[in-house]
Image 1 (cartoon, helix red, strand yellow):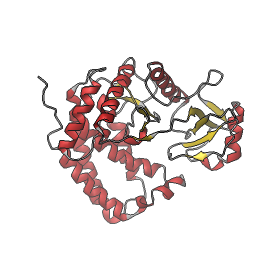
Image 2 (cartoon, rainbow, N blue to C red):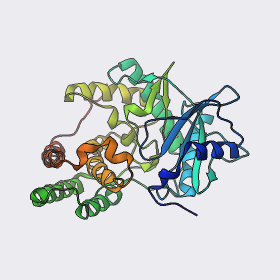
Image 3 (tube, rainbow, N blue to C red):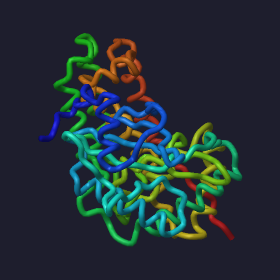
Image 4 (cartoon, rainbow, N blue to C red):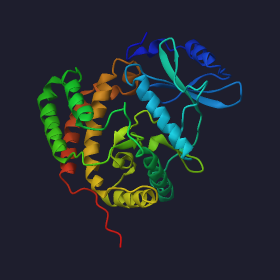
Length: 328
């Protein structure tokens, strides 16, 4: 029986241990909950002395076929000698089921925080992203979605319209500005790009650093433009971002060709993520972990800030996109 979207209340330590026993993995230490909201993720030490991470998937988000595509993609990356946290196959299976909960087992891959302002590290990451996309462009996901306005803007707008979070005195202004943002996004969003398999959520928190980068958490993997895995690594003023982008793309280009027209998608992608994030929080609010972690979401000040954020993003969309100088 499949559980609903907020099914983690019965995920007791006893159930976790029984699930691991079912795949013949015996936890020697306690299960340490890691920072994850969409799924539930735990680290532990097993009887064999190795450290593992187990991920219990939120029901109703991905189908078995979609999870299998993520696992297959990570395995392809491992086979290409790309450092990525890939699920461990047990008896030929990477996705397991116990009492209606789907879960997977991963090696524990600790590391330091990736330093976004370290250009040596940024060069390494650019090189590996080129290699990830070299693998990703071999074929597209068949079951996972392709990035677009429907998933990231239209559906979130409808969900927000039916949510109780936006204060009554802000609703008219909020939705007027949101609709203006959506209109501008429609103007600048383009589908004139090759859809390749992506990490999908390649922000600095999903890159660990040891002797080099280690890419983790491909839960948001999907088809999309290559720039999606690059733009979230940019930060600071425009001059800083141009220097970072130049470093990333020079290293990226050693392994994969980058279509520089996709630089025009950076601000549209930022706008898509902004709208999608608000709707994600609203959709998950019944999960008790969300009010505890994001208490500000139910505060009127947050929604007042979003009205201002819409205006700022509209202004950014109307500015000239980042553009690197041609190389001679």
